[in-house]
Amino acid sequence: MDGDMPEEALGKKLNRKTLIIIAAVVICLMLVVSIAPAFLGYKFEIWEFPFLPSGKPMQMLVIGEPSIDLLGDLDSQRDLVYYQVKNPADLKFAPREQLAQYDIILLDQHLYPPEEKYSKSVSRTLGEAIENYVSSGGKLIVVMDSGIYQSGGIYG
Image 1 (cartoon, helix red, strand yellow):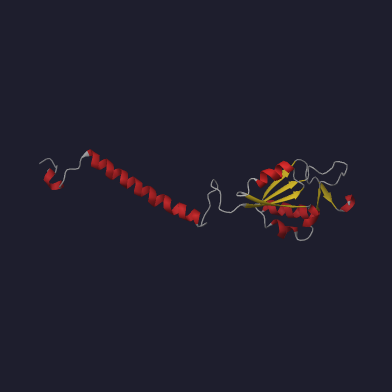
Image 2 (cartoon, one colour; image 1 turned 60 degrees about the horizontal axis):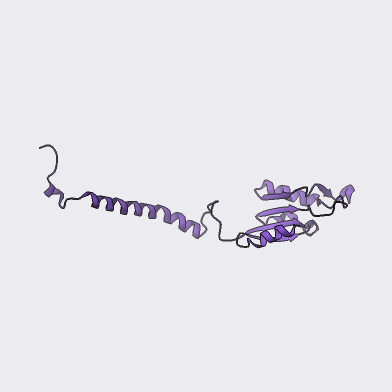
């Protein structure tokens, strides 16, 4: 006796083709069992994958005067981003609370006329609110030289 079992004890002899089919079925089942919870968790918003778009568009606040091209690009991506354009003066009262409603803030004052030297300004309270927003994890995009001055104080 060399330790081998006779073929009769194994029942039906398993040939190579049958083993390959069984292995393929087992691999498919393992993939389904491992991928299904991830897909369901993503679908029901239990967790998010950063490389996959979420079901809802991101909320973006544009502070200033964006170009026509930028507005056209944002309009063509409505499934990814919903934006609202406001003047810095519109954010005079409770700017922290207003900024907290958005996923992204875009500060774009580059189209303001250069002869109005301090038109590219934000108030001190808005500047502090933006600083707090970014330090708490918010995303800020600054276009060119937007927000380089502080309004109020000696500059009016």
